[in-house]
Length: 164
Image 1 (tube, rainbow, N blue to C red):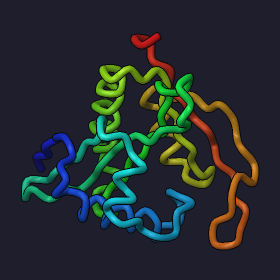
Image 2 (image 1 turned 30 degrees about the horizontal axis):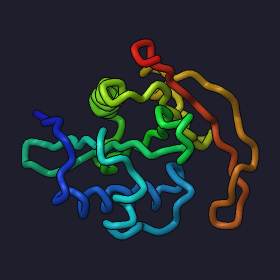
Image 3 (image 1 turned 90 degrees about the horizontal axis):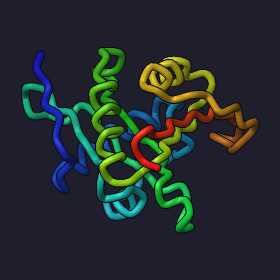
Image 4 (image 1 turned 120 degrees about the vertical axis):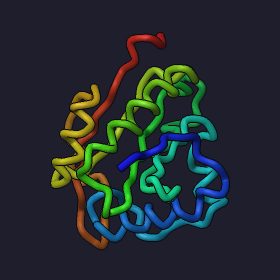
């Protein structure tokens, strides 16, 4: 099957939110329990470094974007990675296509550190990030509650060798 990697367009947002809903429903990808509306979602993410992967039927099957970690000027080059796939397209090795493109794009836009917080039981995602140049910083214990239960997260980061 052929896939096309391209910048995310405003018309992609409904499908992006549908895929995000799958991540919420899976219970291993996010603390979120509700899908935001398109406007709220758009305000959470930087306008740059948003990418989608389409299948041969022009259907978006995965997406990625970056969120600011802080509004403070000293952290303007640090962002949190979000990457999600339609359930039917997980585990096919497609995530690396999106993540590698976002890494290159993030460096072009002056980001020096990308980070990701992953539930420890989501070992596939931890290994995926490590395979793509992220290192484990540590485990943050009982960082937040999901459905009334405390959840730990493994924090990973990737420091650019190009942006200083």
